[in-house]
Image 1 (cartoon, helix red, strand yellow):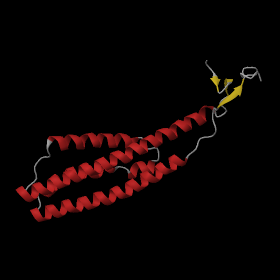
Image 2: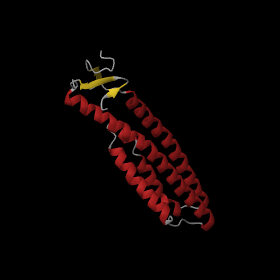
Image 3: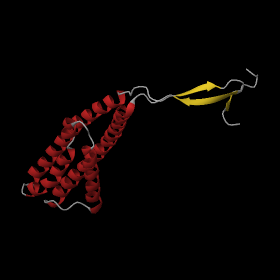
Image 4: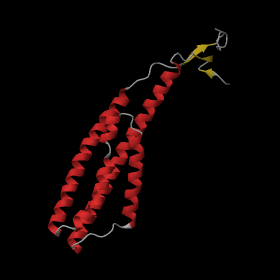
Length: 179
């Protein structure tokens, strides 16, 4: 029997939305920002892992062959895809200061561009350069990750005003006991 719950039939009535369009838009904006920041945290970690793999590849290649070679197709493609995703998410960050700090892909691109620099160095200097890049990458990631985490916690703590609530009102005479 529709609407029957523990012996009582209820009418569901919705209270009017007193928040207005502006508040609903603000609520959607915060929801979008939360999702963007959550996804950005994940993709930044994948970007750092991929970039570290690129540095490790270059370091090992430099040790073994005395010069750098191109990345394998899989690592190159992964780097490209993660870079595109990172850039898209960064553009979705509403806070301009955070968006600027989160320009993390530019550091990863710098690792790719160092190919020319490292090839002009001795093997030892090239390896040192790559190790320095990895240290810089790690410290930059820690800073950016912390800032994104703070922004995310602020978004998670944001509460919208009370909106529409469903209220259950018993319908007179519909209780099985007749009350």
